[in-house]
Length: 258
Ligand code: CIR
Image 1 (cartoon, protein in one colour):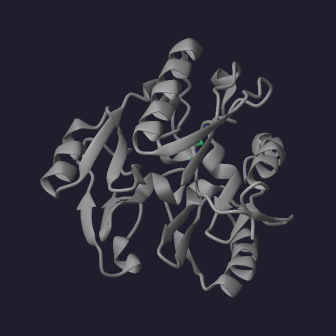
Image 2 (cartoon, rainbow, N blue to C red; image 1 turned 90 degrees about the horizontal axis):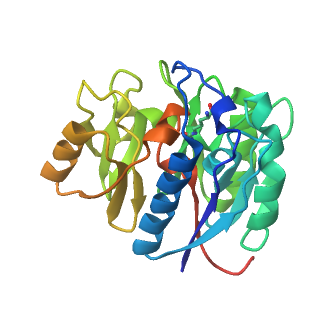
């Protein structure tokens, strides 16, 4: 069984953190409808969706991916680099205790889940504006006993490592080559985003299907030409908040807490 933990859109999403995008008016009702359709796409891929109630005072709290790293054995609750996001962690930690033993990143470490790309037992962590060396070292210390390696990856020009690269099939990565050098990931088929769609490298692989923003039709053609089955979702309002598709859920392969 796979559980997808999500959190409903905050009424304050218009006051979200923005790093690379200018502020644009976000239609909260539309964002909520789009988020609900995203949750339905997860259900259609066989996930049980645990939709947490909104946190009206936390604008970015819909982006649950950033506050936890869920491994098969444990979950690591992050300490977001964005100060405004630090209060998002506790309620997600509470939800995750049903599934995993919990560890916490502590100061001076910062880490956001959007920076953590898991490829098998290898964890690649973006050294971004949000995740620092201390956060990466803490993740390494808790994950290595379970057989994971943890490598820091320089990212430039984007918010998180997974803005620049995500896994889209068994041995396939989708990459924006302007933002990350994919050669460090090893033997993968690499699909570059269409140059006109720089934000298109973030897709959410669930089973053998890719939940993917409808706003990147050119890159979608590239994916389909490589045999990837794309499930398009319209996330235009969440994109105005610099969100994408991995960031709106925590995928938990459910097992009783060890
Ligand atoms: C932020 O800047 O933290 C939010 N406005 C967007 C976070 C998106 N997270 C992600 O892609 N993992």
